[in-house]
Amino acid sequence: MKIKCLTFFLLIPFLTFSQLFNEENGRVFIEAEKFYSQEMDETRKWYIIDNQSALLYKGVDTVQCAGAGGNEFIAVLPDTRTTHDDKLIHGENFSNEPGKMAIINYKIHFSNRGKYYVWVKAYSTGAEDNGIHVGIDGTWPESGQRMQWCEGKEQWSWASKQRTVANHCGEEKLIFLDITSPGDHIISFSMREDGFRFDKFFLSKTWEIPED
Image (tube, rainbow, N blue to C red; front, side):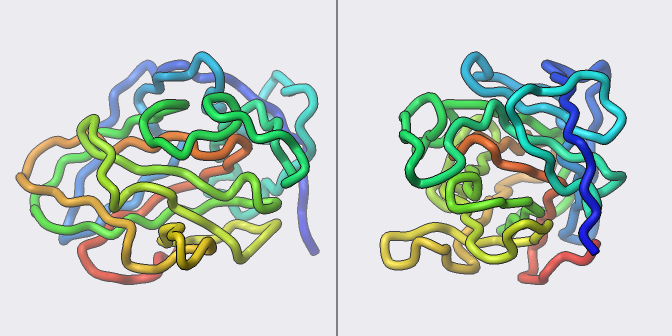
């Protein structure tokens, strides 16, 4: 049986701490709500969502709370394009160019350089809330653009696929970041489609499906 809860939203423009995560043995898991800052948030913002938050974000439907780590996740809102019939407005509810809208940042210390595949656990209700971009140190490489989900609607799903001209549902092993030097790096995500719901992400030097 699916468990649902009323969706409440609390805007967190910045956190009061700057948490540094550590990569170990070529792997690192991070809860999405542990971002240390957000920017480019004039039009769309990332909100921390749980079932005890005090502010109801008007106009958003209930969402699946069960299955998210700690029953807490983040979403980029407001969500104005929920179906294909809703108007697509570049720079408002859609951005195919990364690093232009609703950016969230995470600090990670890497001991091991190399190629890291990026996995994201997301909740998608349809075809218009299933895309995001990932970047590193203020850059947005092609290998981090257009992460895409087609399967697993109405549930939390791990994926690491890139939308391509040949495959709009995404191809595996194309989403990755190159860590060229050990030390502290900033990993960032930016909005592609509003309404995107984000629970956690996983970076790994090997191709492996994450386990919660």
